[in-house]
Length: 196
Image (cartoon, rainbow, N blue to C red):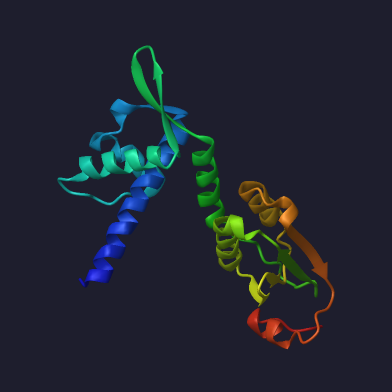
């Protein structure tokens, strides 16, 4: 395996471990720190499909755990002298965004002939959120018309509202339903649609 492939595989494993820890803590509400050990990996598998990590799995889990704490996705809480982990608000937001990443829009049997247009104006100071927004629009299947203008042919208001809420960008995003777009041939071809 080449260097790039090996680094990519390693990054994916680390991300799987982090997502599994977040999912496990979210499912448990709070989780005893004593459970965050290799014997808890079976439980983590329910949330992230962690592959077999070999002899150094304890170190990987521990490093991932402390990275999540350092990133303010998890925090420690002490109860009756015992340490517990809990999700922070930032951690809850990350989990919600992970869930949205797998969201699929149901396409109707027949297109209603209307386009859904998203226009956004997210400030440069909030560049990370802007980049995340673009990534989600691409995952959903939107086509980029111009720099901050995207189009989709099917009802997607629910997912857009969820994203606006999770990313806290409600006023910076406009959702429009449009009957017609000038020069729509490339759009129709992109979505494999025909006008009635």
